[in-house]
Length: 226
Length: 314
Ligand SMILES: Nc1ncnc2c1ncn2[C@@H]1O[C@H](COP(=O)(O)OP(=O)(O)O)[C@@H](O)[C@H]1O
Ligand code: SF4
Ligand SMILES: [Mg+2]
Image 1 (cartoon, rainbow over the protein chains, first blue to last red):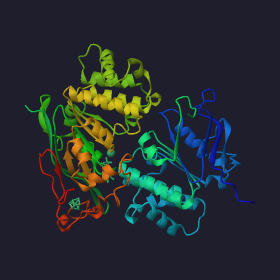
Image 2: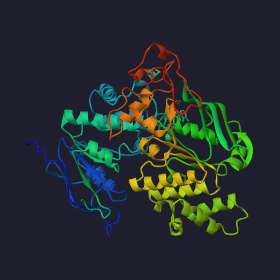
Image 3: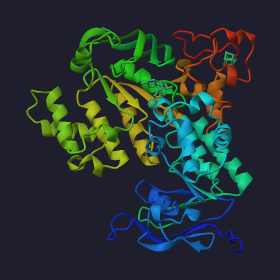
Image 4: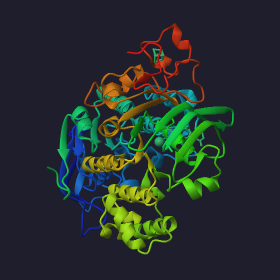
């Protein structure tokens, strides 16, 4: 099979939401090209997170398609083909909701490696922890024993574990102070620089997007891109 | 009588198996009516623990020292740290100090409308009120809600609405002091503006506000003083323009440089481990100005207009 042409992570005419009579997103087209950071802004309730979940392959649209480097995605959530799922990483606003509070940070970062039976897991976790600057002491703490900033670093490590080609960051820094925000955005940029990954950066903070994204698109309250 | 909250040398430690977390260390501050003090610092630095200590919400493994004296004409002068839960529940929480908690939606009862919850609190605080409904509407209006807004269940409220309901609940007993923990997190820009405007109005009305936040820009817009916390200690306190534009502490300077409309560079190194703080200045491992004298703990001058706990201020 020839290598896929890198045309990006693309939403095409996506209609999505929670009630088919009142979709949140109305025929949205959006492309996240490899190596680029696309900012997505818009008021709360406009559907930013819904679009994040569709592009993260976690929520099936009512109609329209998501293309991953030219290949249409055929299933969402657990129906996503494994090869496609591992190419997209998603980070959310509230790290507490994404990690079982009883897991140690080490166990949380290991999860995707275990699930994919990756080789050299301990080494890989050490590498990832180093990358996001988590000390061994923090790795052995449970999620409920660390701060939001520390937990979000662990979530970033876990998301990078399978080296995704695209990252969807949904209000990833909203809970965090300015310094942790700058640190995490810096880590994502470094990863992008090394791997050529494409990033969708969602935030209600216009100042942050102006600094972080290459281009920014706006979702209106009616769920269309402007 | 002076209406005041005087926090003196407050420390809070948590005992964990095999370790002690020094979450708050030797914090002193004062708040009076007509003042808004913003407490800023990175996540995990001890802001919420300090607020919880003042309201008696600490878990059982916490050890508290110091004092927090509440004096006003609403009740007896009281040390909040040694008061019983009964005293705090019946005479302090909601009546003398109102709390707007971190993530307000999770503090509302899911199966009852905002109105039912607000009217219940109205009846608890004002048993003689002939018109609890009218009073609830009045308080709601002060928090920026219309009477119709109150007829929703918590899951039907947007983040901004839930925030306003929490503000209304905190205002019902007309406490003179409000403690708001990260009230702007996740709110859209115009809602942040509205909320800060409400805080300014309350302060102008003679309330005192302790605004806990990691958002420096919000702190700058509403506070008359900013206190910066690092590893459980206050390391700088002063007027917003001084603290943000001419900071004395290298950590405060680093926080300002991290803003996306400034250098957008992180403070180097890792946030401190509260189980394993170095002796002397806890910022030393990350500080580019560190010198031999920093092995000694720097202290914050009491009651100065602008105070910095640093041996080699910027
Ligand atoms: N019940 C607890 N047991 C042990 N450590 C705790 C407990 N609650 C909070 N901490 C620790 O106390 C420190 C301060 O936390 P917190 O006040 O929530 O920070 P902030 O509000 O500034 O983000 C953190 O290191 C946190 O992990
Ligand atoms: S006391 Fe020393 S180490 Fe601490 S902030 Fe000041 S210069 Fe840096
Ligand atoms: Mg907090």
